Length: 139
Image (cartoon, rainbow, N blue to C red; front, top):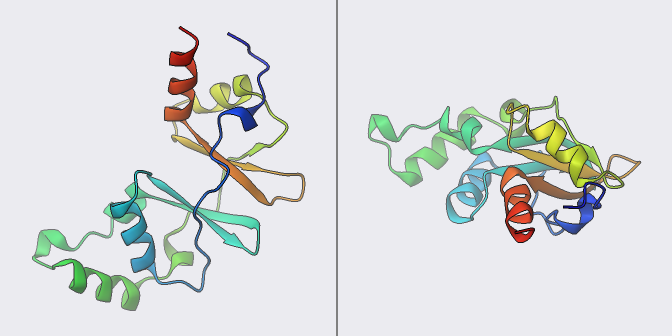
């Protein structure tokens, strides 16, 4: 296995993002309809936050009998993307290696790393699943 393989080899480059002017229900829909668990928040191309499926589960109203439409109405009236997103982001530079990503993700604190360039602009996203797939390809 090559420890110095560039992170660009396994990252997802065309990441769907949201911006602070969007509705939180947009994030809920993305996370429920797509096969991913993290949505980067950008201002232009600059990464400013991230929202995870776990963040959204904390806001679930379904246990109180609310359907999806009612949940979206409540989300959009009571919360904003800025209130829910994590602003303290651990990211990785686009020049980093897979080993660098493994070192960070192996701590177990989270399961995705935004990949940014030197200007802080989002270039992609690498997840623990991406790393496992890479490892599987080595055997």
